[in-house]
Length: 124
Image (cartoon, rainbow, N blue to C red; front, side, top):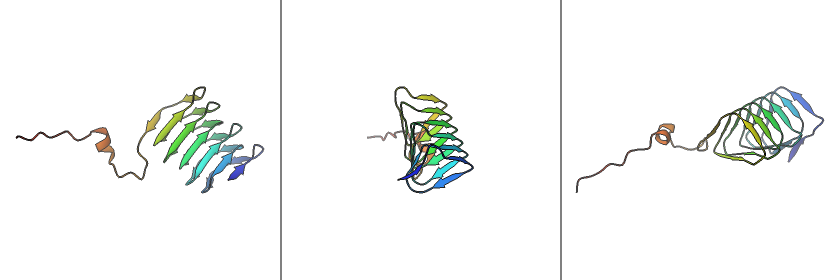
């Protein structure tokens, strides 16, 4: 696991592909094809787009993940969350909107989720 320590501050875009534990501060977008853990000391001010994320620290910005988003009891999220699975623990602070939808690799068109097909009746 890669780690960004508490004393590290990044201003700009952070891109990675392996699992990352972020304990530092990022002012900019975070993009990854791998999982992200934002530790209790971690702070992100920007958009987070990853495969999955566990937030224990602070995020100011929208979060979009393909799989699972966990907002732990120590977390503060100010922004919208879009994920296939969303877990918000008791004690967490979440100010925003959430959208739970199938993973992006799903072949189910959005229109069929919003408007399921009506059952047809056949004459016997």
